[in-house]
Image (cartoon, rainbow, N blue to C red; front, side, top):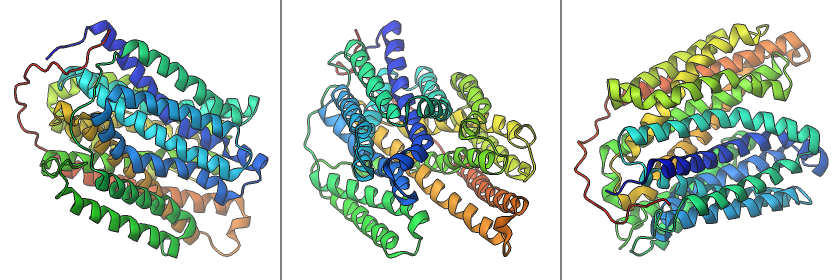
Length: 485
């Protein structure tokens, strides 16, 4: 296997990690700007929720397709196309005259993000063969994930306050353009070049439609109700399309997801664990920020900064994850990560009080969660991609990214529903008018949701013990492995 020179390879890693940072930061920036969007465009809470949800639906629904398209058309080409679409959609969002146009722009942003994310992850797998180098590169990606949410909250608050909400979209345009220019310089035309083979249109349509409708049902369930006709109809249609996709893949000449890939036990388990990790982690960020704002009384910017210590721990631990894997093994490192995640989330749930402070409730358990985050993210990504051949890197990327995205969406939907129902149950008649009673009820809701998240992390820790990766086969010399200038 031809290995790129260390200097250019580090530049490529910085580029791909910056892309990951941009995509994660974008979600937090827009969430902070939503109240200002509603004030200017006259959107109600339902319309504002779909400014966020439209992005999640297209992003989650197209990750699998984006990864496979990158395998067939070329990872560098699809990466650049995704950045271009993200920039164009962001410009459309900045110029949006009303709520519907902004929702459409956010949906287009999700399409571009799905293409860029799947191709970027596949390029990382190609540039860094399985082993310590890949573990370190994935650690950098995990660090960007921990930093992105806080950076987005800070930037969103600052830009919205100083320049207005439209400036957050123009920032995307600028950053995507810069990344595209750097990609042209750091990744040559052979970086993830196209592979021969047909394209499974039936699989692409059924998978994308099924995943998109399932995401629509999940993100809409908390708004319209889990038993509403809209939620049940979208969920049923999504399930039917996914079943049709499974049937189509057994007959397709060039399936979108070859059945033999899904028959790999380690791949199935590691993708399930990647989803479970996000089912706990993603809602935790949302719930902690909401607790700091609605119970303790922080401003939105303060709520975001309350997660800064956690992010700093992620940035410190993530580069050491490869060394931990080397010392104790991948499976033990994964189990350790999930045990720490369960312990930190449980500690956080039990520490919350209606009259607490950031230092007495959130700080210490969030540091433990910060140590767990890179361990579970890096190990699940390593396990999910360890068996991928060079021509399957986009597919492996799409699968694990889809698992993580749907874990995030499902976790947010379920844990917010748990928090809401527990809060309503804890609120007595007329209690909503009393600040102390309202704070106690909301704290009870947050605690119930976090306890649910801790239980999911405990389940993941138990399942991780069953993970066994096959011994890696010798890698032959491959002239198609990408080079860098």
